[in-house]
View (tube, rainbow over the protein chains, first blue to last red):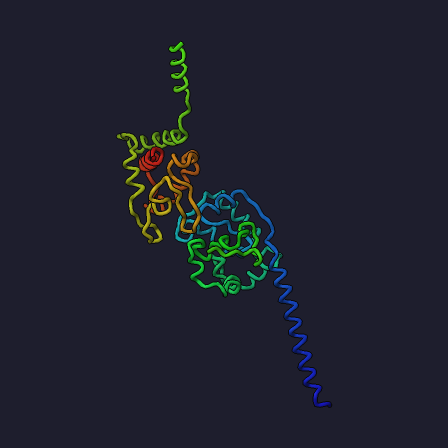
Amino acid sequence: MKKWLPYLLFASTVLSVTALLATSANGQEHESQEPFPKVENAAWHSECSGCHMLYHPALLPTRSWKKIMGGLDQHFGENASLDAAQREEITRFLTSHAADRQLNARSRRIVQSIPPDDAPLRFSSTLYFIAHHDEIPNTLYQRKSIGSASHCAACHHGAEQGEFSESTVRIPR
Amino acid sequence: MRNVFASCLCLAALNAPAAPFQELLGQYETQARQENPAFNGFSAARGKRFYEEKRVASSGRQSGCFDCHSPNPAQPGKTHANKIIDPMAVSANSKRFTDLQKTEKWFRRNCADLIGRACTAQEKGDFIEFLAHYK
């Protein structure tokens, strides 16, 4: 066996793995630029945007939406209760378009980032969010023009329509 | 001729539709009379005290109507999630108190949160009386 053969094999393996990683990273990058599918429901639109921005159902899994809609009388410290008919209609809408019912790459990755026994109430507490905002210091969210990490639309101007691609991000001063 | 003109003006005044908030106030007045036979009308001054009162929300947070709706009700307010709330004063927002369902929904939520019970028709009427005439 030639002495240099193992080195050659090692080098080619490194090169092909690197190439593979680069391709899949580009693939992910490309896939995750897709906006969420357009969805609409009048009750969801009017009732869920009275106090905060409108969150797309594809941001959280079914179990999170069920938990949120089951606790509206204590909704992040405020009473956001609805009558039974509206609550049921909005729950049906949110769960039928939830992240775990979506085929898009971003929703799949969001779901993968949540432990199966967890039902987060905030998208900003998911590992997906944290990993994708690791370069953002906490002080930036506290800017008056932003307020908090839950105000997606401050930087992602198409957030309410499900558009989160990095190329459309504009961080306000 | 002058008389004819004057009586026309008079008729126009009689036929002028009541401001939409009057309709809501009328409904709260009926309820208030049922809740309290000694009901003696709504008071903007009581409504002002109610609006400005410092309260503790069910979350433990120091709050009050003015907290989200702005101490000056002719100005827009802001929710804790940074969403602008249109002014409460009818003089600054003519849509305010024109929809009974919406008005009731917010009284139901905010009274439970800030007072820990449902508001009485008297309290609701005083509140609207204050905001309907706020300049």
